[in-house]
Length: 266
View 1 (cartoon, rainbow, N blue to C red):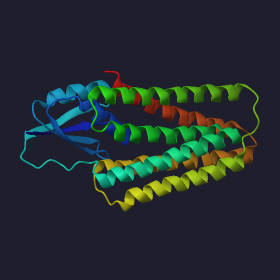
View 2 (tube, rainbow, N blue to C red; view 1 turned 90 degrees about the vertical axis):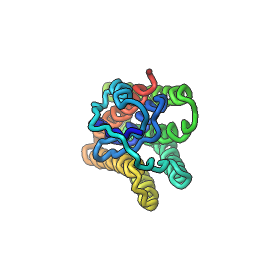
View 3 (tube, rainbow, N blue to C red; view 1 turned 90 degrees about the horizontal axis):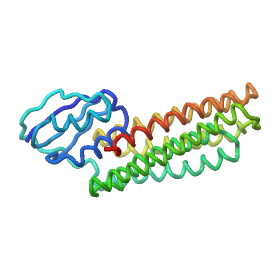
View 4 (cartoon, rainbow, N blue to C red; view 1 turned 180 degrees about the vertical axis):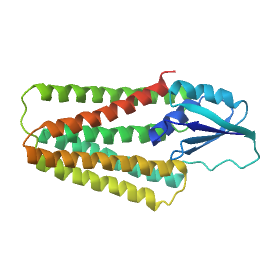
């Protein structure tokens, strides 16, 4: 059996990991994959040539390259989705789905594009985790179908967000309710803190669980951005801070959708 280490320069969150896993699921001979997202490395345990794996990775445009490949008798790494971690990821998924609904309704009622964008960011997280959990054990064709559905849904929502932001930039709209923006974002911040607590409580050193903490930490930054936009809306009496943060977050959601579709197009 071969142990091949790949450096993947643009792999910086669990969404890239899950897309790579789905892409490589159709490659025969792969026995296990181990991810080190902070160092942007993937280790593949496989039979056959490492070049075959590299050729599958290259179309993803993640700047993948082969660092080393050698024969090994090392035991395979444990299954990263054992029952305990699977349960934990379902809990994190449930929290994300709850706040997607809560923030989308609150954002609509408050007239805040920042909250609506943040809700779609929560949905994007849910799609990534849900796609990975539901696709486990299915055929490669089923995994591609799942990725297509998730990617197109996320992209459609992001496009709607862009259209709505520009409509509000050039049309007349009332001021967003900064009190709701700040209050709901503080609750979402608490929700992401809960997710971090659950992930840290597991004390898992598995790379994908560590990456999930990084992913959730990035969500905290988005929450803080919406809170800042709410404060600026209060101070400036302008809707522009809300629209600007909405535009930025919708861009992040669209970027994630494009990455998901990259894995499904071939």
